[in-house]
Image (tube, rainbow, N blue to C red):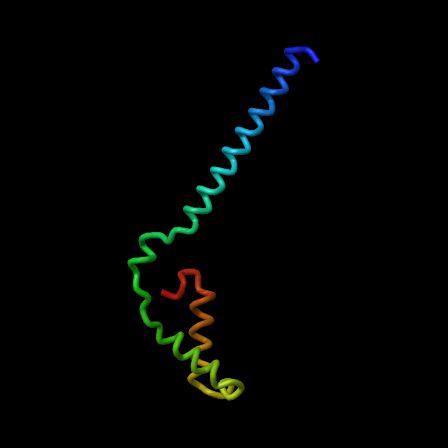
Length: 89
């Protein structure tokens, strides 16, 4: 092999290793940022949703919930929240 070809081959190998190391480093940074909770989520406290409690009660009722007027109303309200473009608020 000629000295120029050997030098070019060595340069290409070093460049490939450097690019791979940079890609791995960047991927690890992205993963660590994604794992951190956002500051707004930590400070917010979940508020109680009365609809959620009603839906849970209906779920526990089983098949009897299909004849319960309160459960039917809760399911209608839940459907409206889910399907409305503004998110029901």
